[in-house]
Amino acid sequence: MPQIPDFIAPTRHTDPADALAQVQRIYQQQIGHLRDAMQRFVAGETPAAPVRAFYPFVRVHTTTVARADSKLAYGFVEGPGRYETTLTRPDLFSDYYLEQFRLLRRSHGVELEVGTSAHPIPIHFSFAEHDHIDGTLGPERRMLMRDLFDLPDLAAMDDGIANGTHQHHPGEALPLSLFTAPRVDYSLHRLRHYTGTAPEWFQNFVLFTNYQFYIDEFVRLGHAEMARPDSEYIAFIEPGNVVTRRVGLAPEAGDALGAPPPRLPQMPAYHLVRADHSGTTMVNIGVGPANAKTITDHIAVLRPHAWLMLGHCAGLRNSQQLGDYVLAHAYVREDHVLDEDLPLWVPIPALAEIQVALEQAVADVTQMGRDELKRIMRTGTVASTDNRNWELLPDNLPQRRFSQSRAVALDMESATISANGFRFRVPYGTLLCVSDKPLHGEIKLPGMANHFYRERVDQHLRIGMRAIEILRQGGVQRLHSRKLRSFAEVAFQ
View 1 (cartoon, helix red, strand yellow):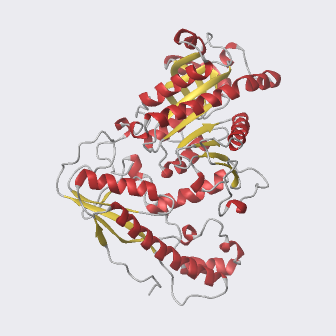
View 2 (view 1 turned 90 degrees about the vertical axis):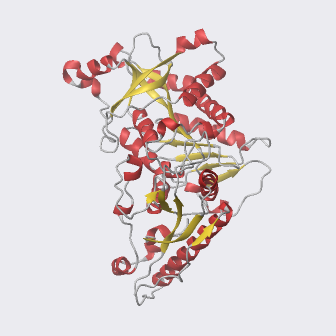
View 3 (view 1 turned 180 degrees about the horizontal axis):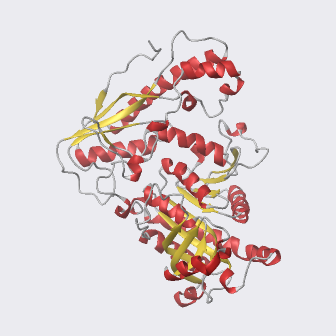
């Protein structure tokens, strides 16, 4: 028989805070059991039987289609039935879980049932932030570990719920959340690997870029904010979990554990932190749609309020000038990385709240009137391709397709980021800057490129930051559009 913690029977709650406290109690008991067993295993002790622990769950039963009148696009189930989801990291997601519990109570007036699920916690997902104890094991002990502890099961981590392909079996509970607990844990570990920072530092507004120049400017801005005693931000975080606190604030527990990495991770992240987590995270995703899909697959489990792409593009119209802006209102998807998850026939709509905020941000930062804005910013279709050298294909076939689609710009990441935002119900938007015009003989040359970057990066980044301010001030509830919700949608945001 496996060694498991003492059973905690399911409990029913009418107070969301009590339900969250029970989730935390179960999770801490289960994780503590795994960590203790693993530490003893690393020390040389071999358990007499396999060691297991399980995720907590939350469940609701409804008997009516009625729900509270709400302008929200989430917070309710679609009809009568039993709904549940497994939960993880209630320390990290405490505010999020509490809000989802509160909305379920308000919408349906049902009790929240909390208990221990039958879904095991993989041992890899039990380690604390700075634990690396498995690295001390020899090959034989590593093999033995596989027999004694549960390993990640990819069958429990697929994106069928988010993709709308989940098959409901008779007698099975309907999903409450887009992501199961193992899927969330998997992404939290991937985020550490790809970005070099802990998931705890990620903010609810995310900027993506494909150029280091933007990151350099964001770092400069971050340190400048930390030197201002009246800044709205409380900390700036760099890869390696290097923490700079705002002047006048004392260091907190764990700050000293951060250290610059010997080399930057694949997609480094930087975080300008607000106390309520409504600050700004910026990630350099590098080049290509594969990176864009990878990082958004994982950031999506954090349920951000919006993510925006700030990058460079090829201008496809002769009327455009280097340095002009392109506000995407549609996408041609030739990135191919999402074709299995999101069919090409699915349209990716522009979201009015994001579009208005970006356009207003350009006006605010450039101090231009409406007529002047039309001269430097064009709203139109952006094409994204996975072929960086599309210009070299014979017979000009890509050029013909882009012309037929009325595309005004082309890059490699924007359609992927927006399509994954659509898939995961994360509000999205794109504001690009024209850095070359390959169809018109204006290609990037080293000197010209450096001059262009110096001229435009600071302004472009300030526009992105201003757009986030506008979105935050407008209220985050307005962002989570019903356009992103399917017929039978999960209740969790």
